[in-house]
Length: 201
Image (tube, rainbow, N blue to C red):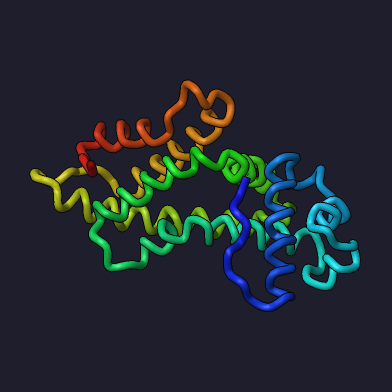
């Protein structure tokens, strides 16, 4: 499902990476609640006590797995804070969808856990609230610049369209997981942007 971490690091860092890779795979396959720490430890070739030496509990491990997913798509997450032109930022975001279509396990992990995390008591609830706030803010800023640069300028509300674009992407992920042969996330998002009057190709 995921490529093994390539960075050498210390023995402890390599063990942490192995645990995270195993947790990511098992969470993707079965969901957060169905997987135990003992399952993850066994998959990573460790004892339960050995895993607890690196992570204090399953909740903490889940948050680190979610952060790992963002690291794997860091070029998109960090693009909102880069000096790239707005059209290039959107292109990177859309291109990431094509790469996501080669990693269904990661997409499945995000879809499953983000749905579970709508419950206020879920360990990833705060993580997802903050993530979506950050995404809406960054996406609105980039879209606002693109709308202003268009000829003539586009009169869309950047904040509203940012929420719509994120919803389109998230909804397409679910549809693609259910029917991958008939849903093309990359092409569908390009079509949505074209309807807005943006041609990022």
